[in-house]
Structures are given as structure tokens and as C-alpha cells.
Amino acid sequence: MDRSLLESKIRGCWAGKGIGGTLGMPYEGVARPLTLDRTSLCSAAVPNDDLELQMLWLVWVEKYGVGLRSHHLTEAWKHYTCLPDEYGIAQWNMARGMQPPLSGIHNNWFGDGMGAAIRSELWACLCPGRPALAAAFAREDAIVDHHGNGVWAEMFLAAAESAAFECESPLEAIQTGLTYIARDCRVSHAVRFVCELHAAGVPPHAVRDDIMARFGSDNFTDVSMNLAFIVFGLLYGNGDFETSVLMSVNCGMDTDCTGATSAAFLGILMGEEGIPADWRRTVGDELVVSECLQSLPLPKTVDEATERVMALAVGDFAALSDSPAGMTADAAGDPIDDGHSWLVFCDPVATGYAREPDDVARASVHPEDFTERVLRSAGIHLNLDSFIEAPGDTLYLLTQLRVPEDLDGQLMICASTGLTAWLDGRAILNYHGRRELVPAFHRTEGGASIPVQLAAGRWYHLKIRLLSCHAPLRLTVALGATDGRYACDVVYSATAV
Image 1 (cartoon, helix red, strand yellow):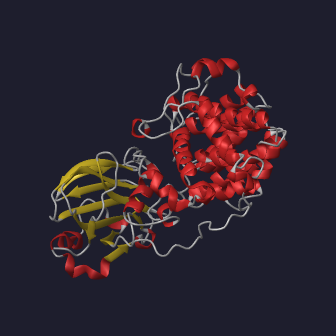
Image 2 (tube, rainbow, N blue to C red):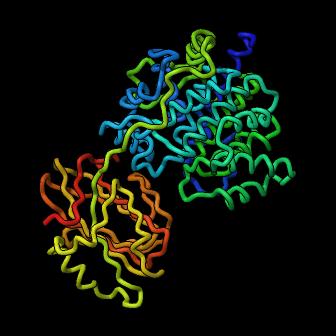
Image 3 (cartoon, rainbow, N blue to C red):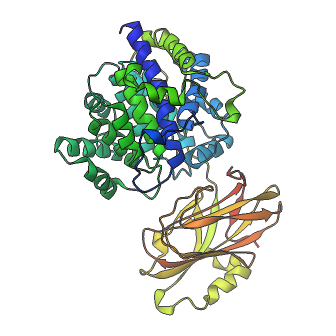
């Protein structure tokens, strides 16, 4: 590729990433359709993990070159103190010694979140026109903090964006990207679904509803749903930057990610000349990053990011095979067994729940008498389907908590049904909604994250009552610091006295 054209496309990628993220950031998590236009763009760029994580990764690519692998990126994560969702889970796993891909699997309810998909552009720009190689590096990146569709999503986008360096249309690049992921994964189904709607001439105003009906999620960062919004904007925008990006963002949900990805994709496809000048002027060329990263040698401008990525892309990466040796294998041993245990009691719906069953009261005093009721769990997520005898039953769960150090933090309890919780006999939560659980300290759905103060070495009795139980039924219980960092070495014992 002509060097000036390559430079224009890489610069368009980073400029678009900043513009789209800045447009969508103020509306992140809004579940309804939006009506933004060009006047909705903030007057200055704002920090965004979509862009700053890739700039952090760039420093590590410069350090390790074409030999960079997933275990190298675990070092980079130590510099990023942002802890929501899959980021926090992966950092918790890594702090306890787990390497990829286990760091992205164990306890990770958010394995199919958007956090990896938003990091795809770096690999596309390092491997322009080489989608197989871009997808391979994207997988190394994604498995650190994702699994399943979260990994497929970054591989798809990296391959599609790499192909976009040489394609004439978004559809051509999207079709190329699909060939590098499993056809039967949910990401593939979502992307193909939007392509089919577009080919069938379904009008734009109907597409969001169609996507939500089939791929909608209570988790606003769900990658399949948001990728469908991105593809919607790319295909229905007819090659116009402004129309495409606004279409994606106006679907709502993870708006900073959909805006940033759509704009970066088009920046690659059309080059920086395809980005309207007024959008460029409004956001500017500065790459704004979070405070935790400001001491690192990250690029400070779009021009600097372009120059540093270009040097790698036309250098060692250009000479690399499409199947580089030493890529991380699927197998990586067994995950840590957190060894949590609970006593579980079923109170049949026919008996009502006005009075606590006698066995539950006895077990609170003599848990050792009920070893046949013990449920053992390897982690913080419990599957309770087998304990429901009939739809509408009430379940009681009992355990003893102990922390190794004094903890002034929070206790997260959530389920997809109504629940009440007591800590040492004091009611701490009374939730009677029926929202699908989203187990994240900063945005808990299906329950709450409750402030707690726990003393080291002491046992605390935790009792949870789940009402009107129906399968599938999941319960998540976790302790963390006030900043959302998961607490290590917490003991959950069913039979401790």
C-alpha cells in the first residue's frame, strides 16, 4: 500500500476513535433510543478506555515487538486501575496467579462484554490488509479478560478492520471479518442478522427493534447486541461518516463503544479525509487519557500515535508470518477453586414464607448438623436450579464469612428474583424486583452492593432468602473494596461455627 495512503487510514482510525468515543461517552448505559446530532458532540475530547487501553498496549508492543503474547499484556494491566465488569474480574484473577486464558474465564460473568472488542483497532493497524494476523493478535489480547463471544468479537473486528484497509465498502470488510470467527457463535449470528436485514431492505427505523428482539440484553455492554448496532450504522449509513456514527450511537446502550468503533472503522476505510472537518476541529488531535496513565510514555496526539504505529506496521510486523509461533493455547491448567460452601434449604411454595422453616433457624446455630445440605461452589456465582422443587419455592442460603484483613468495603448480592439478606441477624438488603442480575459492584442489578465493615479473622453469619424461585436461577455473592476491587482470600464456609 502507498505509504501516504496507509498513514491517512491509520490517522483516520485514531481520530475517529477519539471522536466517536467523545460523542457517545455522556450517554453510556442509556437503554432507550437517542436522538443525537452533530451538535451533541462535546467541545473537547474526554478520556475513554476504548482509546487509552490501546495506547497502553502500544507501549507494550514497542517493548516486546512481534513476540508480544497474552502473558505480556498481563503486565500492562497492572498500570490500569479501572475495575468495572470484566476488567476487575480479570485483575482479581491475575492477582491470584492465573494466566490467560484462565484470567478471562474464572468467575467472569462479563466474558461477553465489549471490553475487548473496543481494543481491536491496534491489531488492525499493525497488520493492515492481513486479517488473519490481526485476528491472531486480537485473540492474545482478548483472552486476558474475556472468553467466548467477548473473544470472538475482538477477533471479528480486528479482521474486518484489517480488511478495511483494502476494501471498497463496509460490507466487504464485514464479510471478510466473519470468516475468521466461528459461524455458530452469537457474535456471528448478530452480525449476519443485520447484514440480512440490510439485504432485505428493512427500513432503518425498524432495525433497532429487530436487534433488541433477538439480541437484546439487560447488560448494556453485551457485545453481540452492541456489535449489531455498530454494523447497523456501517451498513445503513451508506458510506457517510456522520450518518453512520450517529446511527450506531442513537441505538443507545454502550454508546461510547459503538460510536468509537464505528468512527474508527470508517476512518480506516475512508482515511482521515472521510472524517468531516468540523468533527475533527471540535474534538481536536489531543489523546486524553486517565490520570493513572499520565506518567507512562503514551502518545499524546493523533499524529504521534499514527507515527508510532506506522513504524511497527511497516517494520517487523510487515515481515511476520500470518501464523506466528507461540500463540497462547486454549489449555492453561485448572482455575483456582475458591472453595465456597453454603447450606441450602427449600421451603415449598405451598407452605408460604410468613415464617422461617425450623431447619433454617437450627442451621444458623448448628450448621454442622446439616452437612447433607451443603452446596460447594468454585467461585462467586451459584447455580441453584437443582434446589427448586417446584416453581415459586423459597430458597434459604446460609454461610459464614471471614476476611483475612479488616475490610471497609461492600458486599454484592444479586439474583434474578426477589431476595432478602441478613448479616449477623441484621437485615442489610430487601429487594423485590425481578431484574436480570448484573453482578458488578458499580452497577448491580437484581440486588445491591451494600457497604460493610468486617474485622479480620472473625466469622460473620450471612443468610439469604430468595423468593418465588424459577429456573434458571443464579445467585452472585462477592466482597470488595469501596473502589470495586475484589477482596482476596475470603472464606465462605457452610459449617463453620
